Image (tube, rainbow, N blue to C red; front, side):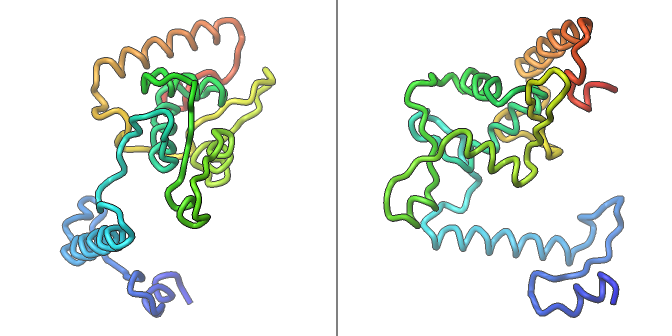
Length: 197
């Protein structure tokens, strides 16, 4: 049995086969309707659980970092500055968010509700979770310093509102210049794959 037949014969309402033109996927009204319905159902389920049905918000307070938003924010920072160590990633994140390291506290509403108590998560646990889910990849280059790089390709940005943001481009340019200097002294793999082209 082929994969299309397996999906067609599966009982789940989420298993749908759509025949689309890959040059314009959203030209298929059945697919658009399916995605709209799915989006509505997810938001409705979120509201039933006490959520607001909207996208995650940026973290605003260092003493109450939502782990869901933190994961998105770390991927954004890493996608601009990669590769970098986990310590450098935390430092860069704190600078971008204009947070102080004192009082850093990461929490998960879901875990707190399940345990019926307020519990926090360590930064290293977040990094390990991201590695386990291949959101980030940790390399061990010859220099001996373990470095992180993004494991996902993003079209947009959660933290940085616009890709053509001039401040973001200046930060990226400064980082690339610094990495270029390091590469001139023989350090290998200092660039993101997209920057090596």
